[in-house]
Image (cartoon, rainbow, N blue to C red):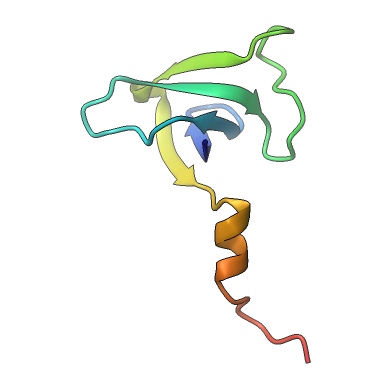
Length: 81
């Protein structure tokens, strides 16, 4: 699973998991486990909903978040001496 941070127009950003990255010809994003940046439940999603479909015309920016393995591969930009 790939974790995305999707910035939606006139709303808070939403974290969601996707199988594949969206392509340039996609009209929407199908994401699972929608949540806020802080991993709390999203207020505008009904209880029990695990999958959302967001049209691309509502999205301003998509950030691809690193997985746990990728986070440990890159050194931190500061020293811990």
